[in-house]
Length: 497
Image 1: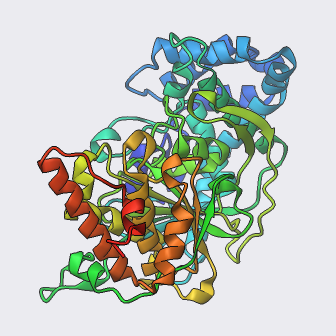
Image 2: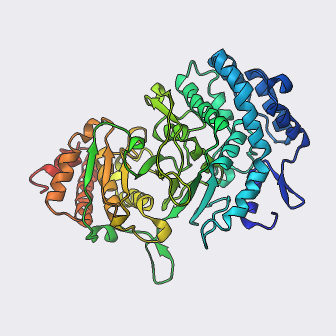
Image 3: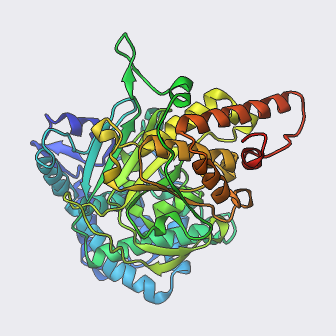
């Protein structure tokens, strides 16, 4: 095992070590703790949130992890399992679920070894083993759902070392800050309900480990090379001269992206650090998706921050929970049975693409470089980069998206919806399903898209109109004037036509 280049890139971020050419836990005491836990609370004495937090501290100390968990994190574990759970739920957790998680952790080294053995034959000629998928290098990792269960069990017990993660642009993957957020922040019900989703995931895992796979792909946008051989991204000339036809648009004033009835590329309104605040206090679109599809969290282990021309696509992550609400009103609403079919690689046909938008761009979002940045970022997410070319119309997989980069990020929803439409069309996806989430600014999106299509505009035609409008916004701002019309009204107006 020690000669594997892929393992070498990730080993420093795992709680395992190589002994006599095999992966193993480095602490015999930790193994003893896990073995005791598999026998239930009557043997391990782990029968409450307080004893669980004590056990977590003990396990971390046995691994010589350099920094202790915060007081709030340990208190958060105790609070949730001792006060926020019913006695019935708590009994099931300590008698059934925790022992199953301990069993999975004992098997973690052998599961990872099996992963590396199988990764060599999964796809001919393509490396799929667990490794750090760093920036500027496209690649894909395939993980079994069972191995992901072991990884997330490590997260639950906070066993991942944290040294060098932030310096290498890797987000935190331990659950300490998630549980710690329960302390000193009032009732904080949305955080409590995020944890309920995670607990429900482990509950399902303890009864039946899914047999499928999940793939994580870092996608790099580069359509051509300049004379020196360097890869370049689309520029303003590329977009303004595109003659591709704009695809049909389906506007949904209700419903959610994740509830798509047909297979689609579902957009995650991402932070450049995959998962955003999922394991902290965040609870908007990306964080909610990571709670109801918790296998997405595994990607946070080995995927550093996305750069400007990068996106991350995840195929096969299973959904386990239903929910209601959003942000502070988010609530776990029970079990969800994911019935989506699987592909030839054993992945559920759930495609999620993470693309990060400009944060609080203000008036600068109308500058040419920002228009290009956002459109290229979306195109990177929507292209089938594995083939290094646009997908065919016959692929049949549309894009399901919404108000990407708006809301908390402060983007203009009218502008962002049309920039995404341009990118979807340039990627030759068959159509775009757009969810407005009740944004009043988008009440006439359907009218605008129908008007543009009726005029026979190409991608390039619409791009030039967006540039023209954006220049007007910039001039108005320079003169400190309010724009006369929003983008949609401007496009509908006779003058613009």
